[in-house]
Structures are given as C-alpha cells and as structure tokens.
Amino acid sequence: MQELGTGEAIARAKAVYDYGQTAIFASRIDPRLHMVLYVPPTAADGRKLDLLVAVHGTGRTSAIEFRDGFAEFGLFNDCAILCPIFPVGVLGDGARSGYKYIQEGDIRYDRVVIDMVEEMAAKYQQDWSKFAMFGFSGGGHFTHRFAILHPEKLWAASIGAPGSVTLLDPTRDWWVGIRDIESRFGKAFNPMELAKVPVHMVVGDADLETWEITHKPGGRYYVEGANDAGNTRPERLAALARSFRDAGVDVTFDHLPGVAHDRMKVLGHVKGFLAKVLTECRVK
Image (cartoon, rainbow, N blue to C red; front, side, top):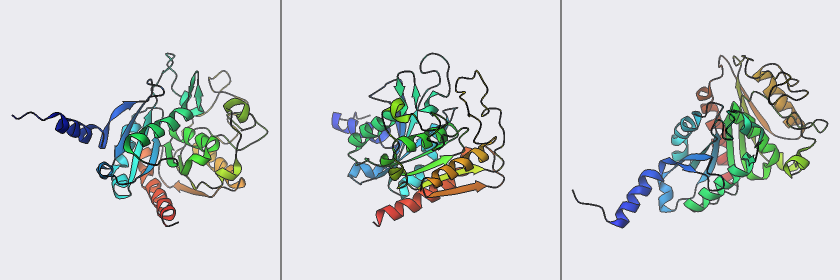
C-alpha cells in the first residue's frame, strides 16, 4: 500500500475530521467544554455559509442528534451547524442544569458560545458575526436567555419547549425576570435589538409532564416566582411568547397536536422557519 505524502495526509485528515460531520473539538477559551459541527464540504472550496448554533438538552446526547438532524438542511441551505457540548458536572458537583441559566461558577456559557463561533469562523474563513440559535428543552432555556442578553448576535432564534422561562419583567430579578441583568451580566437589556430578531417558539400540546420543571423551595434553581409562568411547558412557553410580543418581537408559535417532549418531532418546523428567514435575509 502506498503511503500518503504529508500534504495528502493533511488534506485527507481535514476532509475526514473538519468537514461534513466533524470530530468533537474542545473550546479554546475553556477546554472543559466541547463542540461538534456539520460543515458542508463546499466550504473547503471557499463557499460562504451561514451558521446555526443548536443547543442540546439536559441529556446532552441531542448535540449529535441535532448535528446529524440538521445536516441535510445545512447542505442544501449553505448553513453550517455548530452544537456546543456542556458536560454534566463540569464543576465536579454533578450538576446538570447550570448552562441553562447562563452562568455556573466561573463559566459564562454565553461568552463560551460566542467564542466558539468566533473560533470556528476563523477556522473556516467565514463571517459568522451573526448566527441563528435553536435549542430544545434545556437548550430552549439557554436559547431564549441568550437572545435576551445578545440579540445583536442573532439573525433568528428558535426556542423549543423550555422547562422554565425568563420573562421580560423589569420588576423581578434573574432568572424569573430581567431587573438585575446589567449588574449580573454586565449588559443591559436592549428591547430594540431583540425586536429585530425573528423568533420561533415550538412545543407539543401533549408535553404535559411537570416532574422535572416544578421548582420547589430549597432546590438549586428555586427563586420566588419560579413557577408563576404556568404549570406545564406549553403554558410557560405561551407566557414567554406574550412577554416577547409585548416587547415588539415577531414571534411565530407552533403548538403541535399530539406531540409530547420529543425533540426530533419538532425539527421539521424549526427547519421550515429557519429556511424562510434565510431566504428573506438573502434577498435583502
């Protein structure tokens, strides 16, 4: 068997690990955290791509499912897919949900995602100064809170079935409201920027289990008013939609009949929304 030359070996490695369904990469800003991507092979020839960041739920395995589930969409819509991976217990305490609330110990997950995007934009020679974000369940937590903090970074946001929501309530502190976000995160809420972001919200009407989303006194993320947005995921997402619409945001709401808490059953609706926004953005 003829051995590949150095240049050929490098090219083969890039084709195998850096394009299509990629290897798992560590974040340069925080190697405790990782990412996996789908990058259309056409990018290797200099084709310009948009970017979708797809955020996993509590189980984390959906990072791979989203990477693969959006691959065909990415190929035919010139869109790369970046899926962050935030391990359970990253601080050694077994905690599962820290990323959902943006900050956990010394980790600011919003800043990590922004740096991941910048790192990969440089790697693939792309302009990803704006990107779309989708998340389901725990990823839906993260996505709507990221949109509240960084609307100027997004060309679209799709929020799937979060267990708890942050309403745009200036009379309550984080995470129930936004009164203290400037002191907490160093950034004031900008309703004018958020109103520019097309927002999609999706939940199944059979997504009614409450065992994981009811906050109780003494719980890690319990705060006063934690359950006030509603009892179920559909009720809480509807409250979030009202809050966003009251702030001038254009919200597309998909309430799917007969669908329970099933991330893969919402992807078709997410793709349809994103394809529509991409088409509109590209003709401007």
